[in-house]
Amino acid sequence: MCLGTQLGVEQPQGDLLVSACAKWGQWQQTHPVLGVCDELMGLREWIKRSGPGEANEVLLALAELGATDGGDDPAATAALLWLLLPGAVGIAQALMSAHPHIDELVAGQLWICARTVSWRKGVWVAATVLLNTRREVMSDLGLSMDPRADGAEFPSADPELLTGPGLSGHPVGGCGPQTVAAAEADLLHGLLEDARGAGVVSADDCQLLLRLAQHACTRRSGRGRGGLFARASSVDVAQEYGVSRATVARRGERALRALQDTYATGVRVA
Image 1: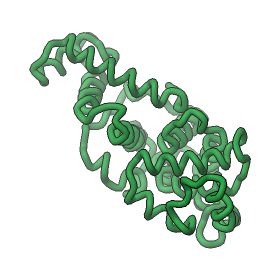
Image 2 (image 1 turned 90 degrees about the horizontal axis):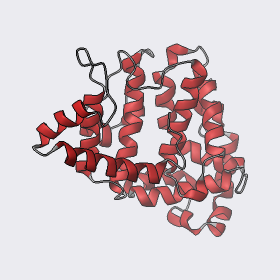
Image 3 (image 1 turned 135 degrees about the vertical axis):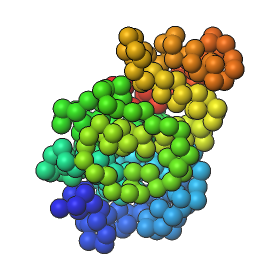
Image 4 (image 1 turned 30 degrees about the vertical axis):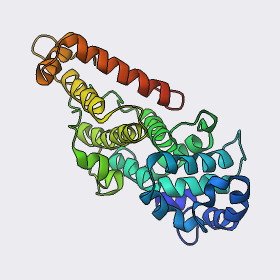
């Protein structure tokens, strides 16, 4: 049974999705931000054309309508998960060899994370729900969530990870360290792109954090791996940028603090 069917959002027969379509006009009256489309089925195309902030306002409205501490309407949660389905499929594909019923595990955690998302705090809904889902599924499977684990590689700042097909664009094989890291990479880059688009951090600061993380995840002879702001990492990045180590540390800490202030309220830190 596919993930969409598990969630009740498989077109056109998904019962919850049918219910959501019928309630769309009612939801628009209580949440005018949903007036961007005459019908729910047009929302995916609208989101593709909208900015991150605009799209998140719509997702927040659906999250509120579906949350247990909001409207408590399962149909609204189904509408939200229909929009997030490509990212959820990517998580399931990346972990498919870890469990024979991975779709069921992802569907269950995705539903819980969507129904309990901190919509009151204005979190970035897509990143929060998907990151928490991946985290919980990997925890259930006993898989490491530490990008510094042996064999894992922190991804480069490839622009296609920010603007390309992402998690849903290509099938992923087994769940070895590089495959799991690839799924994490897509979500991480998506979160950074959201943050950059919303003005939380600049593109240069995103690149700086990525370079620091790459150096931190590189095994050094006799020293192992250091933290994100370990002296060796920040010295290497400072040399690349032609600035002092203190400047790199100051910029990196400022960017990380901005991300934490914006996202940590909704995304648990491993």
